[in-house]
Image (cartoon, rainbow, N blue to C red; front, side, top):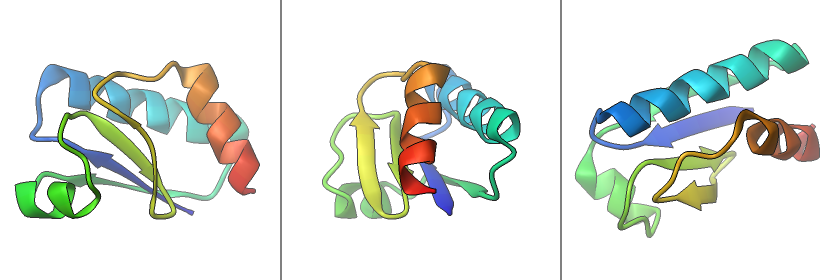
Length: 79
């Protein structure tokens, strides 16, 4: 599973990254978590507002920080 955090490195982006890491750890899931800071790559996803969370190429949320519970639910759906 590939999880991407889209954003330029703002505090909200960092928080979303932390929550994604916690969710993966809690589930014991196997996932690669990466940060995407290149604005052109972010736009390629159709995201205009960051932070955004992408799981296996699918944008799950943009423009806000999801709760850890939401992230866990999305990861479980992909298992």
